[in-house]
Image (tube, rainbow, N blue to C red; front, side, top):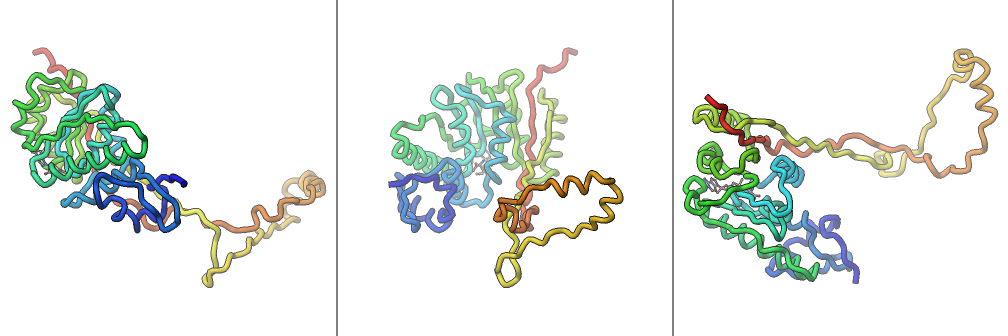
Length: 300
Ligand SMILES: C[S@@+](CC[C@H](N)C(=O)[O-])C[C@H]1O[C@@H](n2cnc3c(N)ncnc32)[C@H](O)[C@@H]1O
């Protein structure tokens, strides 16, 4: 039996419904005749697709950039809002691992249930594949983060991740529970939302400073042997040199080099011309990532 990374398998798109239909997830048989266990990336993709709201955290690179911004590490205590599909929660859960904890708030009951279910589904799948437990390190809380004061009483968070509409309304509650120097990373689709966020911070004089606003941009490349219109391989066409002109330009040396060239014994190598350019279709805009750091208010 062969175990393969499901995310690397081109049949994943066809097979994923079958694979993930029944939590707890079981290993699945692919048309290729091999057996697969789901990868973390596959789990994330599935989380995103199962959420009723079509968002969802644009891509894994956005999520890992959020993690880097937040500087999340083993043992950290993290606050997140909203849970959505639970995709970002999974990244956070993996980063803080068994000695850390994630508190994930979600105002919508259906999204809350979905995120919880997805997380449990992933834990089951991981448990079966790895024969060890994924830590049960997330508290999913079905509540508006604006009214979370009681739930987070006495807690100080190492970092906060916000992916929700109007994050500025959550900041007064959150910022008192964020450690000094800690980062609140905010995920926003429109630049006008970024402006509203910064204006909210300025208006309410919150001790948060904006360190960075960025967009993660991917450029997928296409590299493959060139094909003719009829689908056959195009032969490599040697560029035509004007040897006389070269000799004239470089003197006698260039002629000597030509004479010394040994017989080419790798004829099959470099005989095929390649197409190598960015893909026509690129990953579209996903979101802006805003890094806010809690700083002590300046002494008056
Ligand atoms: C874009 S989704 C989050 C996606 C999530 N990061 C993921 O990985 O799937 C935004 C979520 O925030 C939730 N939300 C919006 N306002 C909220 C609030 N005030 N408190 C808690 N959740 C909120 C929405 O219901 C929605 O599920």
